[in-house]
Amino acid sequence: MTLHLKKAELHCHIEGATPPELALRQARKYGVDTSAIIRDKAYVWDDFTSFLKCYDSVASLFRTEGDYALLAEAYLSELAEAGTIYSEIIVSPDHGNTVGLGADAYIEGLAAGMDAAKAKTGIESRMLITGIRHLGPEAVIRTAEYAARLRHPLVTGFNLAGEERMHSVAEFSRAFDIVRDADLGLTIHAGELSGAFSVRDALDHVRPTRISHGVRAIEDEDLVKRLADEGVVLEVCPGSNVSLQVFPDFASHPLKALYTAGVRVTLNSDDPPFFHTSLAQEYDIASTVMGFEDSEINGMTRTAIEAAFVDEATRQRLF
Ligand code: ADE
Ligand code: ZN
Image (cartoon, rainbow, N blue to C red; front, side, top):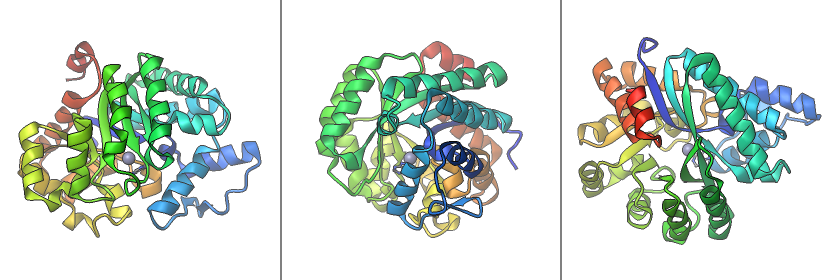
């Protein structure tokens, strides 16, 4: 067990961190029928497409700044209880716009929850604004422009999530140029639903310091070597990968192989209750199922702090 270990994560989608019990409370508040998306206090989906649909339905249950403050505070407080000192949450102003809340109120609500969790537990956190790939390059450029002009102290990076099998990475290079020019940290979902080519495209067209997932790089030996040589950090989410059947089980998950090849890897939860996991459980699996030593797991936590999108003074405080 790893309760005694300090933890850090770089990859959790905030709406995807909603416990089903909280979703049910929100649904009661707004008079929404959840029978199609929650059964026996568990989310209902059976492939990536239906997972995304379920995710959007859960997101639509958060409609005010207060709703988002509650979600962020609850998630981060739970993380802190499990020994987590740092968390980057992936946030999606597009979801705030969809419910009519608006991007600014969406961000302010989350920031209030992050501040409250920090005051209560000491946990440090930052937001990464994400574009949604299946909404297309134009929509992602608009989200990137918003992220670039926002200049909120808790918004320190940009990601691209959503359906990786739609559009080519090259179509999003303009969006990433916009956020790079605004000095935001860059990461992108790649090598999760699509193969090694997608990771290669991400490196070539986005030049990120980190890749969200990246695990299917394992299909190409030269690419694994490139990741190791260039020091690109992978935000690995084993529970998510097994749940979405990217790999059939933890025994065939490539975390250990990537680590052994010298790739800088970190442990993350992605959308924890959707995948019946938590950051603490990801740490436990790395220890008890994948056979990592505590010292190696501490190394991954250290890698997460090294790769975090924070200023240097904060990074030094976290070490
Ligand atoms: N959005 C939420 N979770 C995601 C995942 N695992 N991959 C891509 N987009 C997502
Ligand atoms: Zn993700």
